[in-house]
Image (tube, rainbow, N blue to C red; front, side, top):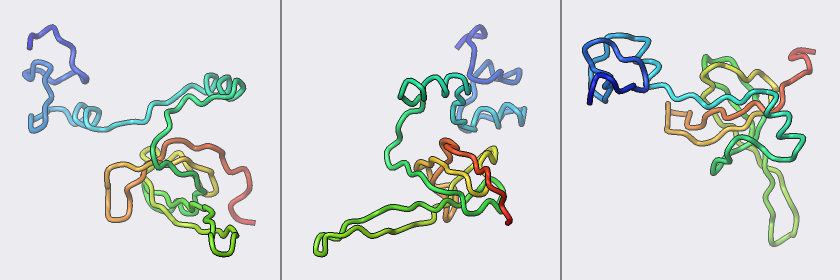
Amino acid sequence: FSEGLLSFVSAPTGTHGLLARGTAVDSATARSVYWRWVEPTVPEELVESAKEEGFRLRPTYSHMKIGYVVSDKQKKTRVALIEYYLFNAKYGGWYKRSKKKHFHDEYELSKLGDVVLIAPYRKRSNMKWYRLIEVMRKNDAPEHV
């Protein structure tokens, strides 16, 4: 690699633009920027125009879920209530089930009562293996009545 190549992050002097796993990085800022993956943000104007035309700008993820945020007490961790329906073949009726899923919210964008879209991610802790994709609807109602 030559000096003229641009790396993903402006590397500290002495590394010649290379930041590989196991390489010592002098700058904490460069290290945090290099390793953190951030969901791409889409400008609000594009989201609104896409909604009017009837399509979505974000990709669809396998096993993504939509739910309500029921807890935002922890730092960078939220709990969403995912509700779904199952069909009983014997009796021919639908019944409701729900699960609580912990998900990672890096910038703490979601608040209590928001409708969120979450998708599976690498396991980050004992309970948390989902991440926030999008806050679909903000909660306008007061938290405490």
